[in-house]
Length: 110
Image (cartoon, rainbow, N blue to C red; front, side, top):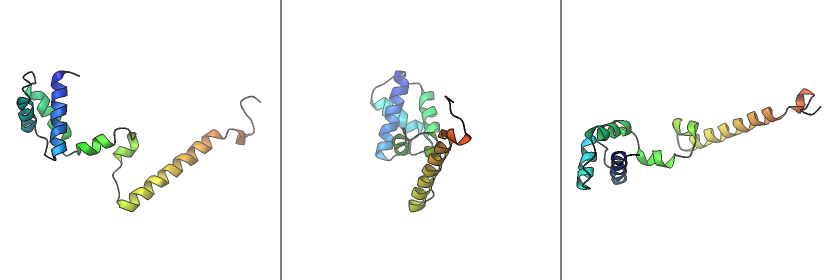
């Protein structure tokens, strides 16, 4: 990662931590205040567009959660938890079906 990308990333994290909307102008202001001169304005506009309407803190919390779970919107407090539990049960059932080759009457070493 280049210094420019790193500087804009840190500036975006600072704005998100303060609860401020992330815009190209605000990112540029923080970068100039840090006396970093080698950042082109295209980086700030790209980061601002990429993070527009997204909760950066939520993105950071869901980094290791996997692909499908982060994309699904939450349906509500209790209902969301129940839906996640149902998905887990369904996945366990599918895995159990895949592992049972002996039901067909033959095995790998027969």
